[in-house]
Image (tube, rainbow over all chains, first blue to last red; front, side, top):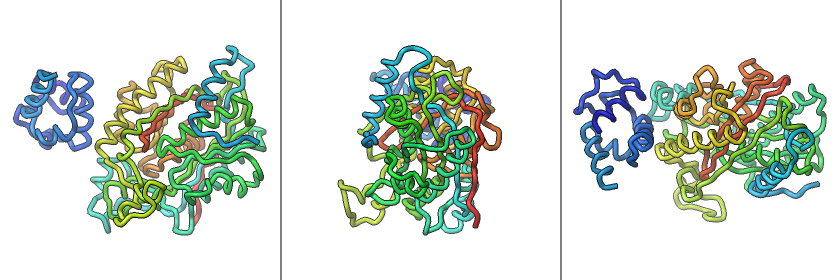
Length: 76
Length: 364
């Protein structure tokens, strides 16, 4: 799941791969609140799990977002 | 003389007319033959707004792509902008030999008054006495709904030539203290003249795909002033309100889906689109949808940096401007799409004709 999210952020949001770590906050990755809306849409389309931009804002960091998405996909 | 038809009936008429028409040459079809656009002269830059709102030029540009917007003076209402753009579209149509219209359709969120509709006044001021005239209300999808309506009355034979206008004085309903909306919207008007013609002609308007989601009625609204809530204790309820991030998500998804549906109905692939002219809501939404449709940046038309989000006016304003400055050329295959309060959405294809468009800005 981390790998998928990493790839999405690298390719769809043009963040260099070396700048993306599990502990990266979305702010550090240069993603603003509208980018998080986009990210939520892409996660739903490519990973099949429905999350909102509010979920991502609350998660704040990549590893927390991965946990959230994983738990939602298991529950589904 | 026709009776004003609700948009849904007009769409059903258009669909039925197209379903029953014989393939090919003889069926009536709406064809564009004139285009005009008008902006009020006063310009408000991001720095002007930052002088009294907690915002900045950099924040506004990065979030929305907007650098400036035009604002109507206090004595100017939507009908005034609609009349100016309508006159320019009629001037454009006259150069193609069309000198009369028998219906005026005005798409707007900001009519001069709640009652009556603004279109009859615009028709009277344009010297079009007693023509059919009505408003269409679908916020930022208004022009698509208006186009379906206008195409429909032409296809059914109820009108020969329609002046279709999108016009807004959106700044008049904005909360000056709400930095999330006050920086986004601007004023302006655009208009097309449609005549009866044939499906294969340059200027022919393709199928319109429309949709709505009333469950999300509260995402974009002016809560008070209508029959649901005539007066409000909280002054904020008289102003436009929008839940921006939720709207952004709905907009990206619905615009993409209805654009694909319109392309499919027209039998076009995304590679067949020469120009994409989406409603100019936010530069990032437009870029996101274009990317999802595989439409590259050089095929996109835009002007949001200079005019902001002009709601129902945005598409005709963009088309007329782009035709006037050469970004939009005869025989270009164009995809238009809009999304707005309701929620509502729509998309359509069209082939731009040879015409002289007039896009002007008022003088101070």
